[in-house]
Length: 293
Image 1 (cartoon, one colour):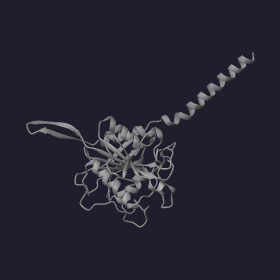
Image 2: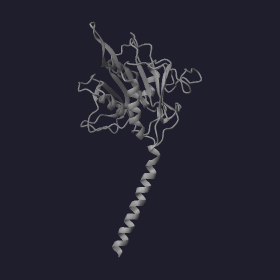
Image 3: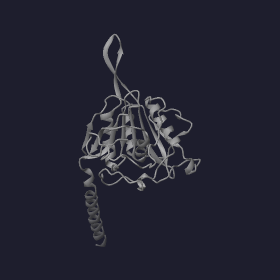
Image 4: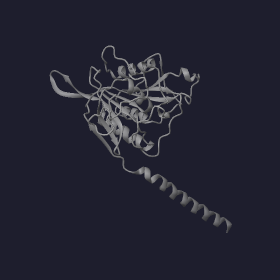
């Protein structure tokens, strides 16, 4: 009799736990709506700078006025630019600089970004053949990795942590100062999801990772509205020397075969390294949240 009561109690608890699990997960199964607005280039090289690295890189990259945006559930997540210093026009996407995607949003967002901004072009195969072939540009990405949690056979002091990279192609390090991001280390980020999507389409791409002395920020449970943190916000604790940013910028553009104007370099224009021009000071036609960087 005791055994039957115990089994009944176990079944009831199991049913309760199952109902609780379904209740907890239901809010995350809602529909995710994407919208691309503005003047967006088609079939061009693609540079994506994300999160902390993207926000800081944008301040010194002289990107100009915002030309487009990607909205997720009516919240601006991606800011598109068309820098005038590029000899060949390119799409530059600053992603998740002012809000962060929940984990279950990352893959759909990555798929949408690659589908909309896929760096492909039509090239005439020969003068005698009028038909065109579809060929791929390259894509380059910028993000961060947590240097305190990075696992290595040869531990490196935090102050000496290098830029690391992941690539869809087996190749040597692009620069002696840039090291591979090696197993068993893992990335759980939108940048990793985008790199996977590019790989599935056989688009050559590389992800550069700036070292961060902070622990990874866990993805939020819900997508919050865009917010520009103040200069004292922990969100902007990550900064890097100009030399490091110029190495990263050079590799981003070199991998993408985007040639900048002679003498172009990454450089902060403001003494306040966290300062961004307010939308009220310079608003583009993208709508609320337009930026000039």
